[in-house]
Image (cartoon, rainbow, N blue to C red; front, side, top):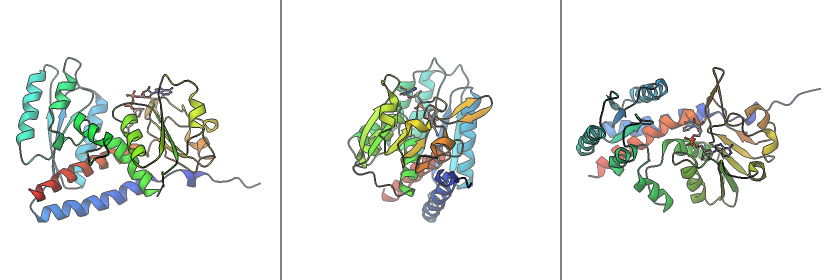
Length: 288
Ligand code: NAD
């Protein structure tokens, strides 16, 4: 008896990212001809290894794509006022296109004041309330990197979402809420589930497109997915030295049309989306 190979249902996100990088290289080259080199400022105000890894990944991609990056690595005695001063200077520096504060930050710091002090025009992370509000009003805005990366996947799969039911599991400001809004703007009908949702399976089973950003390893099993659904797994969970997504990928692939893997899925797209945002801001310098 022959067994069916379902791996073709697992999305090759690496290929999607490589295509995006090609596009970005062309845009960066075009800017260079006008003597513009996009420049990112990264503020790191925590001592977590994971954050250092994320900052390293950002630095590496900046180098690979020939954009400039400057880092502010701050000790744990740093005051909110001092960070506000750094951001104010960066806001006023015409050579800086994008500013990001790597989250989380030291607990004693006023996160809201710090994030809101970044000029919405240099907000490469898309966390500023003005950018979130613009997304809500379906206006051109800086979109947070993880939802933007999910959009790359949706677009490259040529999914027509009009009239489709999209279910999002998770309602965080950095993933769940913005991706729900993006899918709504693409004319899907949206259900956003969260930790207080009763009978999650009832909703996930109806989804034509299911985006899972809950932070709960293998929360979504084959029995919770509709035949032929598109499943995007955002989760990154460390368990027994392994990285697991929120979706039981191999089993769900037997039922879904597409499922994104973890690792090697949405996570690969986010830093590229960050540079995409940075380049978009730098391109505005051409119009000044
Ligand atoms: P969060 O903790 O801020 O939010 C999780 C959301 O999921 C909450 O709204 C919560 O209500 C909901 N939730 C949790 N358990 C649930 C359950 N059992 N049923 C229904 N809803 C549930 O997390 P976040 O920052 O949005 O991140 C979510 C996951 O995505 C995490 O694993 C995180 O590591 C990962 N993540 C990945 C990337 C990436 O680049 N791939 C980026 C950001 C976050």
